[in-house]
Length: 159
Image (cartoon, rainbow, N blue to C red):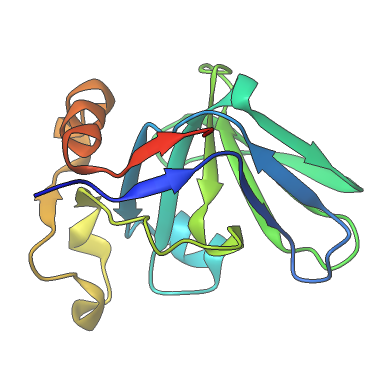
């Protein structure tokens, strides 16, 4: 079966349109997080996250950032539109080369199929996605999951 093709750059932005972004490089991983922090920040049952190379993401417009410490002790910097407060990205301060992009902010997220879901123990029971691998947080290996996702992901190209 031939893989779907997705043209780069990808575009997205906030609810009010004041902040826009472009992603010039291929995403590295798409996953679901059911932790309480992601539930609270997204205002939903979980967060659908697209991990991207930070250098490939360009944001324009008025951003507001804040840093929080997760229950596991990681410092995470979040960016939101300064006008509508729509959350756009998160960055683990210790890993500045990667950005977690909220998939719902993409203009077209139809290709963003998750390879795994984590923190399932804190999931709202109906929100656990059938057929998507459940990975314990301690076993969540970004390198291995990224390789698995890219093996099934669309082909991203600028042509």
